[in-house]
Amino acid sequence: MVDVEKEENSPAVIHKHFNQVLKAWNGEIVYVRDQVTSYNRKRLVQHKIPFVVPGNQMYLPMLAVDFREHFRQKRKEIHTYSPATQALLLYWIYNKIDYPDLEKTPTEMAKILDYTKMTMTRAFREIDSTLERDTVSKIKKNSVDRLLHSWIDLRKQLYEHGKSPVSKRYYLNDSKLSSHLTLKAGLSALSAYSMLAAPMHRTFALSNDEWKALKNKNNLHLLAKPDSDCVEIEVWTYPPALFARSNLIDRYSLYLSLRDSGDERIQMALKEMLDGVP
Image (cartoon, rainbow, N blue to C red; front, side, top):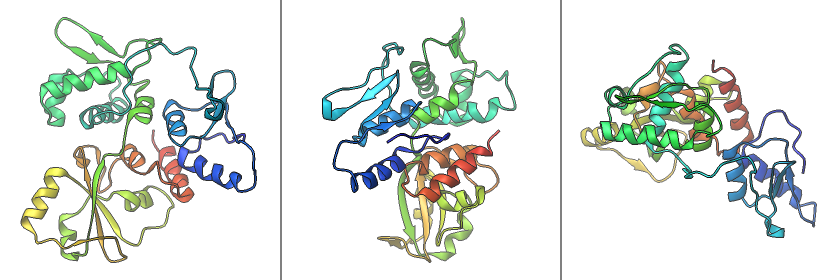
């Protein structure tokens, strides 16, 4: 099953196509593509989809053949970043565009992102451990502190090791809460960033502290499942307002929250949204 598209599909979409082919083919199926990102490769393995990247990687579980990357040096494997590390990475991605010489220490970043110095120090180390060792080091050391120096690979790291910031979802039918909810998320935000039609119910993002405060001040009526008149609340692992623009959550966090969707309309809208990133 050879993928000749220029843009890489998500593993969820590939899995859907894989199942469609299975309905018409009784033999084995192998997905083939010239290049597959590290993140998507891991997800293909999770979905048990056999694949080959010619001359580079191979995963054929029906033949008990696992893939190996001949060029990758061994290092500690970090599958997903912690929320603090992801917040640090997003800060650099968004601010390095306007300030290419920006350098901050863990102490300075702790004040900016409202984390402890120890947490930020661990975040710096976590990013450093996932950077390619055959490229120029992105975290340089001096006698005072360690500085995150370049953002050339940071977006790649976000795609490979980032995860959805959404920890919990709640559905409310309290329309009076609209004045407390201003930061659009989910499909509500995606419809603002793209040509996707607006969803039946609105979605908003809150930090964990904001959600607790909202519950303490209001007698909330939670729904078991969404309906057209409800409001959906996403509770995030890091404050969604950190990188928000106007009344919308930031594009990369939105992408991470929706990239595993099997809906092709959503995948197309995500691509359209990311095409608008500088």
